[in-house]
Length: 359
Image 1 (cartoon, rainbow, N blue to C red):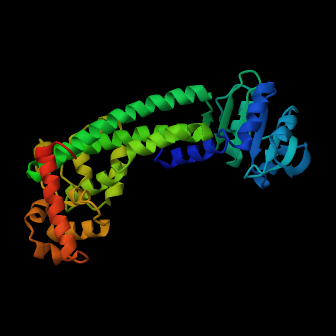
Image 2: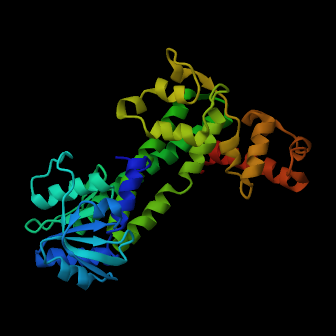
Image 3: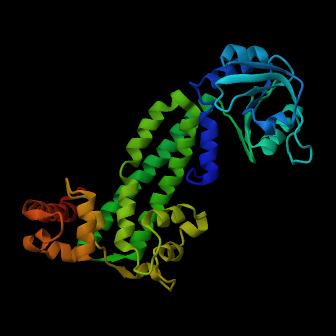
């Protein structure tokens, strides 16, 4: 499951509210340890009041000890939206019984229906299985043990590391082909495919980090290091190779690639179609000429605004490589000193990539 879609963003928002380090998670851990079970609703508005019977008003600040003690009663606990206040306790909830639920236990059936009826985050803590299940609207998510999450997070990091190595190798090879003006569309599609796989794995790791809370800080640092500059590199590459007929912005194009299923993602024709190319036999073997954005973005201390200006002005990497200092100087915002740095930077990049074996 990728976390770049709206449904996944909603899941992340839900999960981080009960992540380790939050007061609510500390209270839930107490309930689990005691084996009492609990039914908790976050939000006290008319939609919740309408399906509530009995109970009593509390209206006191939330603490983990208070929620733990109130959880010993059979009824539900209703908190404020931000979980900062305990509104009511021992409440009997009666959601619409016509709402579909696949749950079998009474507490879980009620929790799922309350979430669908009100749209509020509803938490069910199983008394016998020590399981915390989150419901919000049609979303359902069961929290996993920290040790399992840590193992999954580290395994996903290893997978991402392999994809990053492949991405760097493919990007390096593409740079060499660009300087030789020998790129075909399958080279571009290949880098997009690897980047999309990285984005998907990144989404999985991001969910683990949210659910781990304070326990996920090390994984978060490793994730940031592994994905550094990848999105920017892909953005510039799409600008390089997007067909004139392609109307979508580079970020939108990449999101469309990420959203493909496995069969579509590894279909070169489909990936090239998103770049604005018409489907044809052996489309992957069609020659493609970079505008120079991605290579220019690797010139040290060159602002993005200048990269965009030069790419637009010259229209191809080959013309940029052949441009004189005077021609570079004529571009808005460049100037004599920067023109010299650009020319020298491009020359060094070409030598390093074609002859030095270093990016």
